[in-house]
Image (cartoon, rainbow, N blue to C red; front, side, top):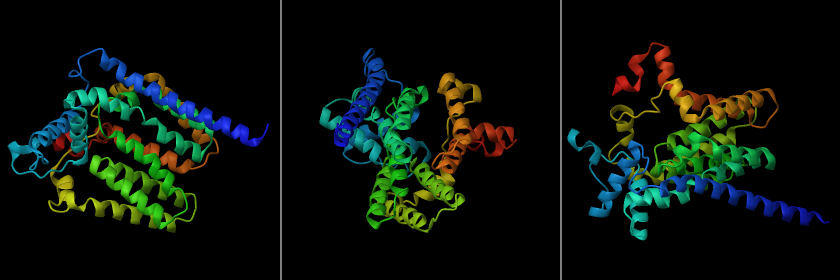
Length: 323
């Protein structure tokens, strides 16, 4: 049998695997919702906020300016990325479904796609087998299912991070920098976790420096792409100087749970499996090892920042104190 035969068979297997991952994710997310009213979903506060803004768009044909969440406090500019409520309003318009039903019956089609970009990143950086195992574990992780199953459009950030890492890990070209900049701009207009994407890319550059690899082109890649993303979104954040609002006036938070709460949230088996996998990764030779390690520590700090500040006796910096 020829090499082309085996390559074609491998390609078909990959397509079948990704379809199975998508269908598995879709069924896990849609089936429980079909058992109850479409108006009885599991939403976090931010999702209700987006639904409220989307309803305003449907009712008035414009963005809710000033921000309707803070009307009681005065004229607060629209500090929340506008593309999220516009997207929900658009889906409601074309499907003729109300917004709660869109979130419980339509958004799962998008949410189920979330593990797939990570598959391609891991395949590029490592190999097919590791990519398949990782994608399957990710698709079955309870916290991942929950946070990508409640109509939180932060899912687009989870699509973009692996794509951004794929691009910046390749040889720099202006075309790729422009593509990455446009992708980052879309990310910014959808969710403020855009800044998590930027930090992730910056950590990648730092890891390359630690591994003594040339980073001049990577820095150029990062700066040009970030500049483009800020430029194409300037119409939104420049007029009201939103960076000032985000830094000095608007308080947000990570998950305000103690360590026991996180254990329940992630699922003990998957948390234990994650720690075992991390230790194994640290003791073996893998590509991009430094980046994965410092990225994990960054994510750990982001999740447990409140607990860490409490242990350090810095209650003055905790979100609950600030608010």
